[in-house]
Image (tube, rainbow, N blue to C red; front, top):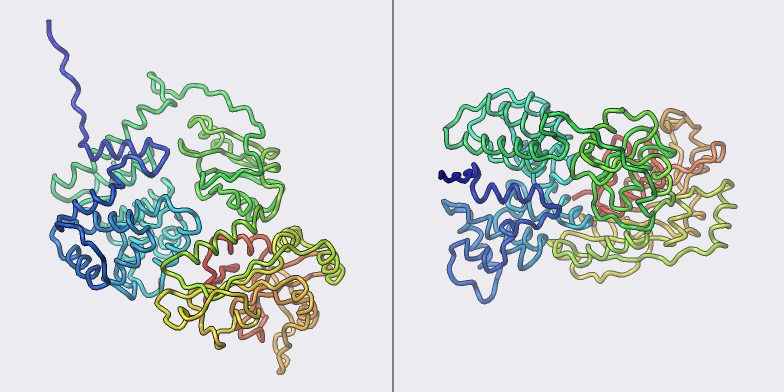
Amino acid sequence: MSKTKPTKTPWTKKQRASLSAILSPTPNDPPDFFPSAEEAWSRTGFGELPAAWTKELEKSVVMRARDSRTDVLTPLVAYFVATRGVEEALVAITDAWDPERRFLHYEQFRRHVVGLDDATFTRVREWMRHRWEDLTWTTKVTRAFVLSRDPSIARELFEASPEFPAISGKLMVAVGDAELAARVLEGSKGSTLALPEAFDLVETYGAAAEPLLAAVLERFDGKAAFRKPIEQARDLARALAASSPSESSGGKAPVVAAPTPGPSFPEEADYGGQNVVIAGRFHLPDDVVRARLLARGLWTAAKTPARHTKAYFEGEGAKPDLRAKAEKAGVPVFGGAEMRQLIATPLFRFRERISANLARELASPISVVTTWYVGPPASDAQLAAAEAAFGIPLDPALRAFYAQCDGVQFRCDDASNAESQKLAPEKRSWGEVGNSTGTLGRGTGGVLSILPLDELVASRTFGTPPADGRGRTVQLGKRKVDLERFLENLYVFDFWYDFYPVGLHVDRERGEYEIVIGDDHGAVWDDPDVERVETYLERLTSSRGGEREHGKRLFRRPG
């Protein structure tokens, strides 16, 4: 009787671990990716663990890892992260190797960055984007790869330069969309000698990575040893496709009944970084819908439902093929009624989220907080008085903000600022917080200074017409407004930086509130972009406050 020979797996132990990571719902599996501190240190080969660390010893160890002929930096970073956390590990590696943050790629931090909470990820992202315009394109792409949890960074790089000489696996992974990754590959004019990110492509796109890897293999021009991992990653993508419940033995997708829509997303829940896909039109503008979903921990960067998608929300006018893809992947499909329930409240738990963000900044080793204040909720009488003063009903987001906190004040610097380290975090005058030439200095980290309601109402005289008569109208979006009337209805909202003041424009004729940002200390309002109060405030819950993204412009405090 012949014995059946067991089928030999085509993958190594490390590649099987990659498969486990792809199929696992948590970033911490398999444990080989996140070794214990003791195991990580043993992998460095540096011998006995130091009894105490000093700056000199840290620099010596980091330089020794940098100069090693083998990859010692990866386990060293793992050791620092396990014993100090991601932020302190960043500081240790950077201070020892590249204090100006101009050359380090931080590639060894990628897997550690994936599972960070939103506020910590935001700080790490800003840390790695320090003086972004001064970095080389290769450094930007590698850091975008590390920060691929936010695919907008890589997409901006690709849109700015859609063609480049070599195949960039890092950029293909970091854009976060298989169709866009294919466009990145098309824009790569040369061949490739290797693709270290082959398994990262499978981890990111699953079965959809197979055509990408097949196209790479067609343009491969390197050694066989470097070709084999790409082939194995392609085979892994095929295996994922073959094992998908959406594939039957006949090669046709079985009919899957559409999930019954229902209120499965309670409004009061916090979904902690789940990915959802939205398409079509809902009862609120798209930017408000996305802001309110993000406030509940639901990410909307993906455009196509996939196996790891938490839910697909289908609005009016959505493409039918998206529903088909959701059903094929077993993703629950919801409609406008569920969306309306989920995002009913503006600025969901805003006070809790902004306070948590500031608290993390206070505990961060890369920040020195010099100002901190989250005001108590405004009273009903204050809200009624403000509404009477403005002459129109309060914007729902404006009311929600002041009903939770009557003013927010925050200021921090990078930990390297010796002067800031002498200041205790406390409440200060609102004008002092945003003043770049005052006693607090430039404030290179971040600034937030939203006035209390009473002071907001009293700031109506904000803004001065130009003495030479220029700029008699203001362009607000697609409409023009008389400058005098504009200034009469302009209030100081966020005094984050005296050169670029953030104003609240109350358009009494239209019954609307708008956020605008001026120039030159408020002397120039000739073409300010317009933003909703809600989206402006929501961005502040996950930002250090060192810049303001507004319309097509990015306003920064000086570094």
